Length: 434
Image 1 (cartoon, rainbow, N blue to C red):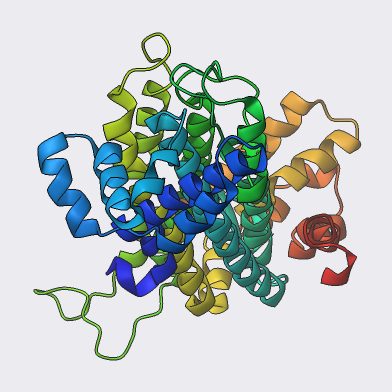
Image 2: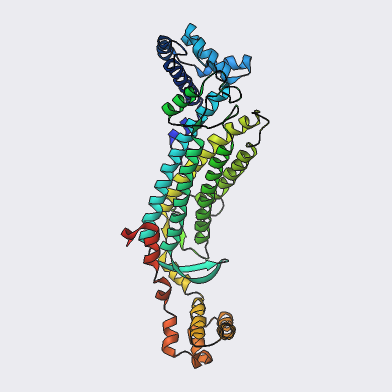
């Protein structure tokens, strides 16, 4: 199912072919840099570039013997290059290649995730503008509170996605850091100029200081940012799931012709897409925790982080890409039911206007405590007896000593609650949203 929503390019970033291709790219640019600074012959670099290649199958076969993936890779490349291969990887350590290559791939994946954010935000904005004035009940603790519009709910999601996008941009900048500094980061056998040259050529930022590896706080930032983004997606998905509940049914995932909701109950139309989002967010959060665990390594480096990153880097980026695109489709095709929203809005027969009664009484000089008591008593009675709240207020009479019947009826106008919708939309989407 993931393949239907994830762009093939994201999977290709994490393919074995692309992994070794980026390793080779780093090695070739490093050779180019060394030739530029007269550390190796320039004609040798031209021959290396012309002949350099690899075979995934051959690398895997060599690794069966060497038990070291970078050595297996270099051995295979040397088989293509010949004698000039002695200049490849000169003065470098494995992590110079691994971490710089990983920076390239994480940057590529991050940029694709930014594209997914843009597509989701565009879908949310379109539906928000469509439903800017679609009135519904706002809920706190799952209980009816005061009126909002469905567009406002979507505007909140859009605003949060803007923050997610900014976080992703910053996280990409942090993780797109390369290094070519040797066995313990001292540049003992390869000068800093090589690192500067390589990183500039590859579109990366050179680290200011390193051990044998790029420090993993950068990765923790990246994967925790993905976890926050996934949490937002889960938040939206849970809201859709609640709105699709039979007792609510204010919005619903699109149910395609021929789709089945249950093997046992033919009537079922379940929010399976949103439920998937809730589940996958848990995985991405757990991967972020693993990234935090990778920050603390022994001395200048151990290898405990390596196996973790081989899992969490492809898994988290592919899953976030999938979640963004699946949620975009859900939002675009979301079935919205304004009539049900109106029916639910009126379900408590006017109790949702209790705060306006309280505030108007306070404005007339009644203490807040007395005003609260005066409103709560008939509110509880209206709740129990299922009578219109406004009728009970007028009939009960105590509030009428302070507020005229005309004023009371004006208080029960839903438009009072919506007078700043345009202001909120302008804050979120800009003045052009009107």
